[in-house]
Length: 494
Image (cartoon, rainbow, N blue to C red; front, side):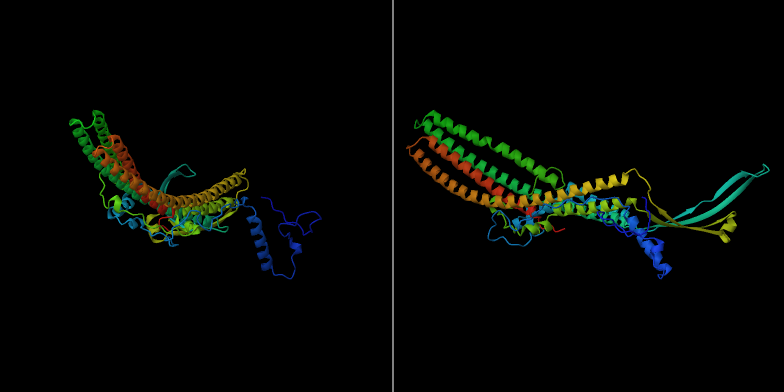
C-alpha cells in the first residue's frame, strides 16, 4: 500500500471527483489547536488504512419471490395456525406417539447431529476467546557451567518466574466478525439438528403407518384365502356330484393357491418394516408394538397457514439462512486481513541468582510492548481468499433460494396429494360397492346353476383388487398427512 499526501488541487474537467480529501500541513488553518490537527490526521490515516482492505464483490441480487397464497386447494377447516410441535399425537395412536418419542431420543443420526451442535458450541467459544486477553505464567530455574575470561569454569544459577499478558485491539472488527461467523455456524447446526429431528419423526410416523397398512393387507389376504378355500370346497363337491366339470374345480384350486401366494410376501414386508423401524428408533432389529388398526386411524386436519410463515417454521430454511449469515461474516474477516493489527503485550517477573534471595528479595523485571503489524506484499493471497469467500457466499445465497423453493414445492405437493387422494378414495368406495354387489349376484347365479364359476371368480378378483386399493389409499392418505406436516415445518420454530 502506497499513500502520498500532496497539496489540495481541484479536479480537472473530465476527471472523477477525488475519493479522499487531500490535505497538507500548510493547508491546515493556523488557528486550530495542535490536538485538533492531530486528531484530524489520525482520522485521515484510519480512513486511508481502511481502504487497504481487500475488495469484496457485492452479493448477487435475489430472484426469490414468495407467493401470497398456495396454488393447491386447502380444505375449509384449514387455519393459519402453525402445526403443533408434537404433531404425531394428532393421529390418536399411543403406540405411534411412543415410537416417535423413542426415535427422537435414541436415533443414531439425530445423536450425531446433536454432537455436532456441541462441537460448534465449542468452536464459538474458541472464536470468542480471540477477543479476550490471554495470560500465561512461566517459571524456569536454570543452572549453567561457563568459562571465565581466564579459562576457569564457573557455575551460575538463575531462578526466574514470568507472567505474560497479551491483547489484540480489534480496531477493524475482524475478530468480532470471526465470532459472529462462529455464532451463526453454531445456530445453523442447531437448526440442522431440528431438521434431522423433524425428518426422524416423519420417517418413524410414516413407517409405522405403512406397517399398519401392511398388517391390514395381510388380514385381508388371510380372509380372502378363507373365502377361496370355501369356494374350492364348493367347486369340489359340485364336481364330485357331477354338477360341474373338473375344469371349474381346478380353477377354484388355482385361485386358492394364488391367494395363498400373496401371504408370504406380505409377511416378509412386515418383517423388514419392523426391523427398519426398530433400527430407526435406536434399537436392534425386532418387533414393533402396535396400537390402533388402520381402519381406526384418520388423517388429521393439517393447518396450512401462509407461504411466508413457512420461512419461519422450516428448520432447513433457517439453517440455509444462518449459513449465509456465517458466510457474510467470514467474508468480512477475510477481507480485513490486509489491515494492520494492533497488539499489546505486558511481561512482568522476578529473577535472582540464589534460591534464598529469589524467595525473599527477588529482582522485579517488566516489559510493555505495543505492536502494529500489517502485510506489505502477499502476492494477492488475501484478495484471492476474499474472492473465494465471496464465491462461497454466493453459493449459499443460491442454496437459500433453492431451499425456500423446495419447501414451497413440497408443501404444494403435500396439499395437492391430500386433495387428490381424497377424491380417489371417493371413487374407490364407489368401485368397491359395485364390485361387492357384482360378487353377490355372481355367487347366487353360480349356486343356482345359472352361470359358470368363471363369473364368480372374476367378481372375486375385482372385489379383492378394490379392497387392496382401498387399504393402500388409506395408508397413502395417512402418509401424505405426515409428509405435509414435515413440509410445513412440523411445529419446529428455530
